[in-house]
Image (cartoon, rainbow over all chains, first blue to last red):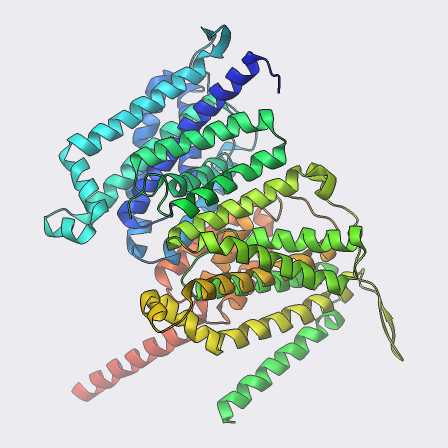
Length: 288
Length: 335
């Protein structure tokens, strides 16, 4: 198909930026899943509220955008600690109850957002204006800044897991909870850390999404679905898997609708996931 | 036949008679239509609980409802099949799709299965939303005909275009389906499911074909989801698959809430749960935006404080009462 290079580049840039948002979402989900065995379906709402906090701090209150993002991450991390302690720890280790708690939480947070923030669409100011010249076409600057920000966060998480004491403890606990416990690693502390990091990452993702797309109380559902699919695609508990899976899904979202009909582009992720599972049931980068 | 069983059967018979009399007693169209939807939801929740018998959780039950709904509507509208044939074929379509998807999906761990069903349901919804030539795309499918009028010699003709008469179709189909699901749960197949749930390696070693039984379980549950979808299509007369429609992620999640609030370990759990949550949300309707919040709070409350669901309440009271009785006796004894 003969499409101008500009269209292609635009599609790839969009897909790439959205892919990184999915990565932030999937990272948090995989943390909570591998530490506590909990599929946190309300994570999309954490992302949504994180975005609204950035909006309120930066637009009506006039705070610096980057400071607002940082503050929002801190606030959501603290909220994450509360959620872990009062809602998710009591149901840990069961199958259906944590899912129901997260569904209940989603209902409460979404309708709370409808009541509190209203239904009209808003958006966070763009991270940057203008565009770069790249291969003879223009790529919007704000997309690139979003990607850089997400990559920086991912690197931070990576360094935390590889270099710090707590990060190593988390890795150990994910690999074998009982053995880690015998070595003096408190599983509850690890769960707290998982929720803290997950909610901070979701808030950052929401803020980036809010500056590229719009804010609505329902903005969290789509990234949540993508986030959980990435876990299956990349392999549970794998940082690399979440990253590669996120970028794959993002690029599919950005590029497929340009080439194929919407029907094919909506079926493609499912088919890719099924093929991956038939070949590697543990996901692209998962361990058995 | 012992006395308890006799009491059970007669109370169920009484309940069924009352359900048959509902349209005669309640003239209000709104409440009869609420009850009709409750019936469809009960079938959905009960069939979803069948998957739960294997300790698997489907987050995408609504995807198979969508297959049933669009399948049956299109079979009637484009192929010209009669309603009853379309109903069964639509159910079979959902079941066969589940059987095919079950092979890759059930190979992986439980949590993955949940996620994959969620992805399937969203994919099916998006396909229905975008496939303009088949499903009407964003406009949806409209003018789905009601079932053909039924002529009973000597009685007359019943047409099913009104809620009060369509209610009977839903009632009969749902009761029959529930009966089949109940019988399945108390058959030899169910023992094998239990064996697989408790120790799949062990089950495999005594010669149970684990993968096949899992797939069949998933297919049966989805067959009934398809039936429920077909019932819904000819009741609603129009279908749309946008994000906020009945085929969105939310319906599947609500079904899980029904099961857990009612009580996941009992057959009657999803039925009680569906009824209670529907009643609560109907009465909370004047609260507008706060309505989902109340359901959410109720769900969290039941999970955290009433494990076993509402159906476990009488037992809980009994235990509590016995404890109290023992304590008062002890106090009296010491005095």
